Amino acid sequence: MSLRLGLFGGTFDPIHRAHLRMARAFCDELALDEVRLIPAGQPYHRAAGPVASPAQRLEMTRLAIAGEARLVADDREIRRGKPAYTVDTLREVRAEIGDAAELWFLIGGDSLAALPGWRDWQELFSLANLAVALRPGFDWHQLPAAARQEWQARQVADFSNRTASGTIRPLALPPLDLSATLLREQLRRGIAVDQELTPAVADYIRRHGLYR
Image (cartoon, rainbow, N blue to C red; front, side):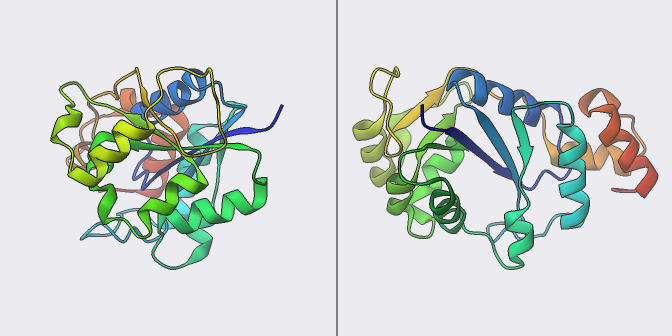
C-alpha cells in the first residue's frame, strides 16, 4: 500500500491542545500513516510575525508531540528562510514521496474561502488532496465563486475511490474554540494556561520566559 501522508501547517505560536486534537483527528479520520506538523518560518499572510522565534516554535512542536508515533515535526519552512507558500511546500513533499503516495493538506474553512488568493492555488489540487476542518455554521454557499466551484466538483464523502491528489474532504470533528492569540495574551498577563498546553510545552515557555 502506498504511503498516506498528511501535512498540517501553522505558526504554532504556541502549539496547544486544540492543534494536537486536530492533528489526531486528521490522522484518524483519513486513516493516515503519518501527519507532519510544519511550523511556518515567515508567514506571508500575517501582518505581524510570530512572537516566538522559528527555532522556539519548532522545539515546542517537537515537545508537544513527543511519544506520538504518527505525528512528526517538519522543519522545512523554517529552514527555507523566506516567506512560506503552501504550493512550494507541497511541491517539495510531492517530489520526495513520489506520484503514487496519497498526500493530504489540512486547512480550515476560512482558508478554503481565501484559497483563490493563494499563490498558484489551482496547482494545489494536482499535488494533494485537501482536508477541511469546518467550524459549526460553515455554509459552502457563502464561499467565493472559484472556491465554491472546486468544493462542489472535488468533494468526496467516503474513501471508495482514494486518490493521490485532487479531492476535498470535510473533517467531521470541528476544531476546539481555542486561540493561540488568546493564550499569548493570558501568558503575558500571568494567567495560568497549563491546561491548554502539554506539560513539556508549558515548562518550555516558563523556562524561556516566552510571551511575557
